[in-house]
Length: 244
Image (cartoon, rainbow, N blue to C red; front, side, top):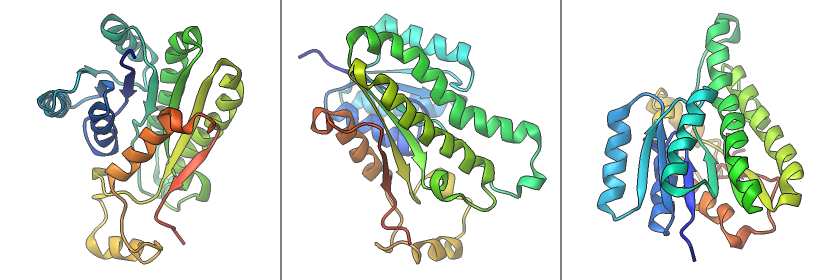
């Protein structure tokens, strides 16, 4: 069988890196992507290459459609197209909405929601031609619950969830599945803003009494991408340790 290609946006570190690494270990050709930190992106590429994983790394801000087009052009040259799209790129902003500026909330919406639209739009050209494919959007439990002091982040992830369900209906007849992973509190750089006391308070609200690992999200993504999940689409799959 021909090797499948997976694009993981925002894969220099954290959840994206864990997903890219696991897919690579399972025989996929991997496209790494980051928006600014070229050194972190190169370091991740080196780590995967040392594990004999076929991969390329492309620096591109996926919140900008033109840069997305450039990213997919590089993919087309190397692999032809993307079989699995993991829309993982995202940023957070913690603070009162009344203190935010329009520029700040537009940036959150652009990176977290518009990037999903951009990459999906371009990836579909190849997927529709092949009449198959899998799109997995990395979302957040706050997209469903809403989070105080993260109102725009919550709104962006709620948009991702709605887009996921709508695209699953639209693309199902074309053999393309679309799902989202709704993450709870995962041990990544995004949560390093919380001190130990704050983390402990969070843990007390988790049934399993611990914070999740990026590798656990990666395993779920791999399951959803493969034939074992061939009848699963339009789902917002929650991985939060039983958040109370």
